[in-house]
Amino acid sequence: MRRPALGWHHALPTILGVGLIFFAALAVAQPADNSQERYQRIWRHADLYQSSGDGLIRDFSLSGRLQADYAWFDADEGDYDAARWRRFRFGFTSLLADQFTVRLEGDFDLNNSASDFYQRLTDAHVDWQVTEKTSLKILKHSAGFTLDGITSSKKLLTPERNNLTNNLWFTAEYFTGISLSGKLDKRLSYKAGVFSSDDSDEWGISNASYFTHTSLSYDWAAGLGLEQAQVTLDYVYNDKDPSANTRDFGHVVSVSSRWRHANWGLQTDLSAGDGYYDQSDIWGLVLMPSYSFTEMTQLVVRYTYLNSDGDNGVRLNRYENRAVSGSGDEYDEFFAGVNIFFYGHKMKWQSGLQYTSMEDAAHDGGEYDGWGFTTGLRLYW
Image 1 (cartoon, helix red, strand yellow):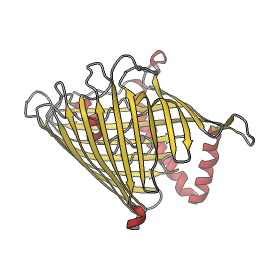
Image 2 (image 1 turned 180 degrees about the vertical axis):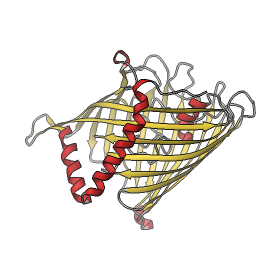
Image 3 (image 1 turned 120 degrees about the vertical axis):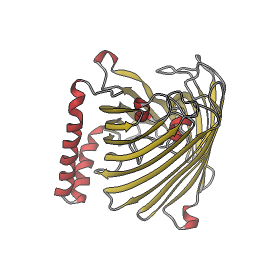
């Protein structure tokens, strides 16, 4: 059933379209170097303080991101058509004594009324640079794994994370915990952390159990003569708890990679999860090649496949799920999109068209076969 946009949301597609035309005209009207200098001057206003001495506070900057979407999805089983604010986060980052970075950001929903504006804390942690190659994060921070799970929403190549990540990754993303990361040599880096699966909007360790995340990344670029050639292995152990703010998987293993040279790029993910309670075991594959025509324009193509060993083990992605709320057992997605970078990832326009199908062996409301289109503006500072 169609869920129409309400109130001022009707105007958002027009606002997005006018914004795209304005920024595109702005970029074309002046040389790229001048445009970049102009954006740099604007973004510099977020840097509120920078010390030239040896004081405790070395710098203090505003941080955040603003994202707006228009999405149209039309399937045999249902449809969805709406414009909405996708994300708004705002806070600050401060460097103390060259060793400690304090970061605090809140998540706010611009679609809600003022009384329900604030949602939760996202990044709310201290990052201690223990040595030149080792850092320790304490309190609430991202626990990312899988290809798009370890990619900030600020730097995704598609408007939405792929559905393999959506199914396996703990989409709450920010958890109270402690993690150690660093480099073992020039090519091998690591991350290891223990997190509470508490669902508190702020910090919390008491209302659920825990999970651990271990990650190893190896950089092959120098040996292969490429600009980027990184392979990452993630392993997650998730203690079973019905109140946990995580997916119902006891073990998750992901092997993802990023390759780039000249104008070409390729990102891949092969991941699997061992389900508990009513969650079936699932596995999936993502292949995402890209080609940059210029520094400003990029073509991205993605194929996503998921398979469940039992009924109703696979969820649909964000906007597909608003058209059809059920689950299935085999999922295919073909996506093609264009990115326009006005100021790198700090200011970009993303659009994409996709065809998605999902089989539902249980025949209880999870079958899906349809097209979707998403377009939106992404900003961060």
